[in-house]
Length: 361
Image (cartoon, rainbow, N blue to C red; front, side, top):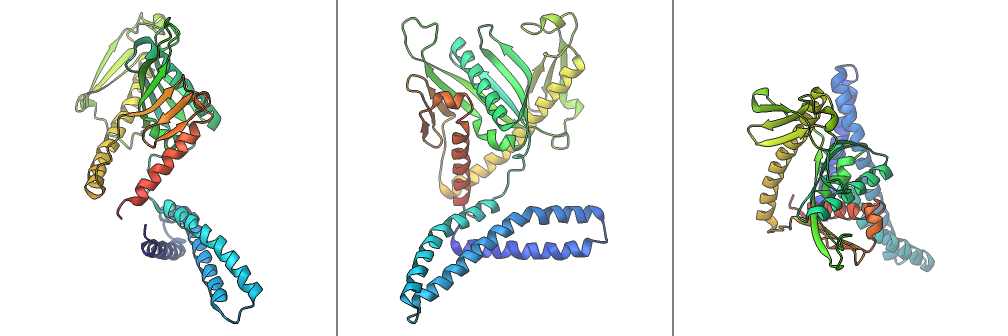
């Protein structure tokens, strides 16, 4: 954002903050709902206002230092000290301006939500299923490091330590904000344990991270659902396959299908399936909206199409490469243990902020 436009925007924020202050005073004896809403908006804006004051203070200080430097009557020692302080302040000001600009970016309303994580084996047979299991363990460890709670909703295992599909809810502070850039195709290059000749194989797994949706976010009409019940089967299903406890729900308008059989209760399986269905429908709405925005962005700044493959995990070289931001870390073990995943998440978040900052206002 250009400097003149930035400071014009900062003036608008300060004016709005002053207006909120007056409206809060006026609402003090009125509706409690209105007072609560205004209080929250006022409180949410306070960190931005404080950052704006820091920027303005730095600019004023810089002007005062320049005045000392330009004043021919200033003592030499005073002028030298002012030049030194101005140099430090000039280096600091762009960071202060960028910080407040980032704070002004529109927030993704889903950032604070819990997430539904879906990991599926892709091309590569048993090796893809083993890699899918590795990825899921990576997210479990990452969640543990952040103090989040992971609840597996359903899992389809291969019997040799791999998974065809696993769906889990991850609950905690800012989960979706940290995991939303993980969606896409993850590729692995390594020598399978079963490969006698030592050849490197390439296989893949897909990851989907959906913001958990509330009932108020998505309205699901009963008439739009087809619900089928059947007997559970396969690993985890033997103990419940004497009753029709498994549930398959189809959303007729979109064709989205969700199956759930891990619980012994048909009612619990239905509740879990509806939770996943709600998240998928909510994400479909978000994706459609983002597609419209992306089309408008391409019209303004040109095409920036990215490959569906987002990341490669190369075991022989011990590296992880994120293709969207061209970042490579030679610490594959630490990424898979969740310890260094934040390095990639931080880089992706910074890239997203930079992209949005560069967009026309």
